[in-house]
Image (cartoon, rainbow, N blue to C red):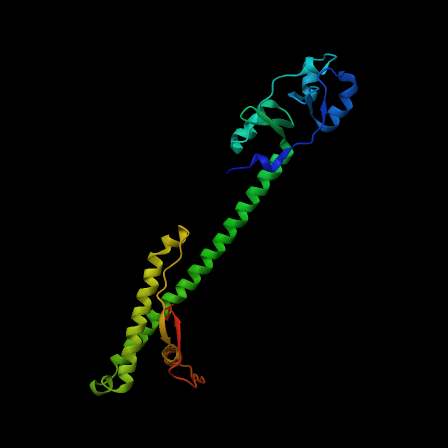
Length: 252
């Protein structure tokens, strides 16, 4: 996980002169937990913490300063919090190479890290929901053409030779053929899932598609499916133009 130090960089912070007296800044130091030490030319000299005063109870700020870790803008999250743990400070200076940029507060870094973790968690939940929905839909897309093939094969198996050659038999064979092609398409899409994982999309093959064929197949399939389950179902739809076509991927 990469955290941008710049997002938490503070260019306004409490600071004191290196030769200020400790007694005069103790309250300010305890209130904030740290004070940045700057000279008269605004050059960064260090960060003063309450622990510095306990370990080195001198009168002047400069005499109490102890070396602190330095955060570079290129540091990783692990490196940043490792430096905070080593320094035992609520804030650390941020540098880009040799240039002092500002101050990074530990509380801000923790809040930023928490925000990123929450975002990743939400994205993982969304990703899981998308996968679940996809698999649920895929299960339907696989079952539908397969049921059509098996259903019409069972019907045709009961036909006499003459019935097989009839218009109705040819219609059923045509549905079986299209359903088999649809099933093969779904299987190919499943194989191509690696494209989705890599950020690409599944390929579509658009062509002029006769809407009448799609509705006719669905009508025949669901009516016969209902009969096989001992249900009576009749589907009617209004189609003023049986030659109506759309430019799309008819199989999908």
